[in-house]
Image (cartoon, rainbow, N blue to C red; front, side):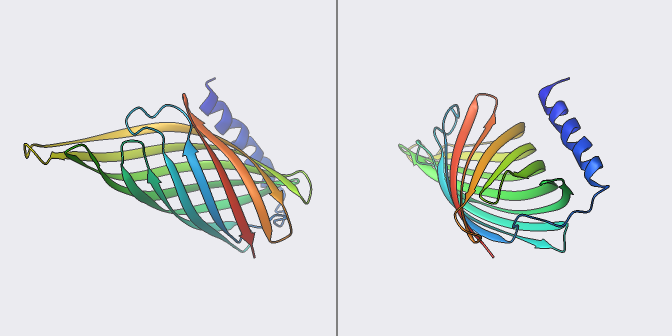
Length: 212
């Protein structure tokens, strides 16, 4: 059995077990976060990516989770832009942890210059997500996640000297895995460090959250 299928199978099994226990949420889902992340390896097309983002989420009742996020990005080849996204999830309580099954949709736009060539990108990003969130104590929490991400990307370039224009489009599908550890400074404030990877590409993130 391959790794993505194994991950889905294990999380789905846990979700089925949690259906027998409609536990109330023990951890906060109503929050606002500021995140800084950066690409550590790979990414030959765009170089190392870094970005600063703001996100928020609200739990309606005990199960429905709604979120929104914005982040900017820049790369070593001077490509800059932002990504806006919305997400919808369903929370299932299981023991001292939660499983969140959800989906998200985002749009990315960017532009930049490479010498005398202007670059433009436009992308639609859709993902299906599974996350397990576990409370080790009132201070420490851990996260394990898997996402199937589909990106419909359009890119174009325009040479300012020759006036030549080139355009192309492609669709990319990736399996993205994630690990994170959160330390709750108080009931309202936390600091979270995470790592996401797909293939040989990896990205580390650091965020601060206010929970209300």
